[in-house]
Structure formats: structure tokens, C-alpha cells
Image: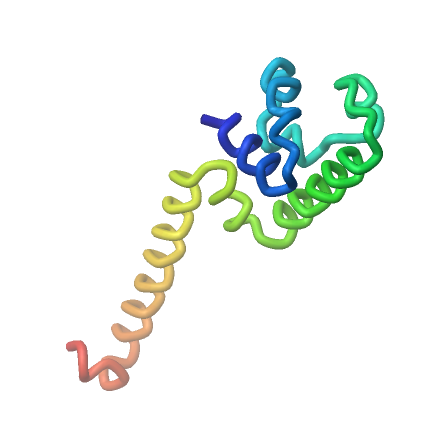
Length: 111
């Protein structure tokens, strides 16, 4: 399951020929996000174009992890992303209900 996301990333940058290398080294999307030049050397990925695309994609993944945790969670764990969204919606609804309790006239349309 987690390798499927790695494959999708490799597919998006036209590098699926390296999928067996990443699978053999038990990469998941978290590992891919943290890949370094040294890692690429150890994996035997030597072509400059492939290295640049992989490092650029890793940078994008790290940026997504930092800036948009929900989007990153959707990429790495769709169930967790849905749980967070539901929790967030629940919190918004709870705040709305608490506000309605303090000022019921503001919510005449739903009361």
C-alpha cells in the first residue's frame, strides 16, 4: 500500500524504471521525501536527469508536508486525512453550537 504512493510519484516524473530499486530498498513516501544525493548514490541512480527529478520531487513532498499537512496526509494516509477532516468539521460544528447556545437569535433559521 505505501509503495503504491512511491510508484505514483515515480510515474508522475516518468521514472517508473526505478520502481524495483525503491521497492527493494523498502521506500515509502516518507523516505522518498527525505532522499538525498548520498541516498541516490547508494541506490545506484547515476543519471543526472533522474537525480534532479527525484530531488525536486522530494523537495515538493517536504514542502507539502510542512505547508499542507492535510494534503500530505491524504497522500500518505487517506484514512488519517479523512479522520482529520471529520474532526475539524466536528470542531467547527461544536463551536457553532456553543455560539448558538450563547446567542440563539443568531441561529433562528436552524433552531
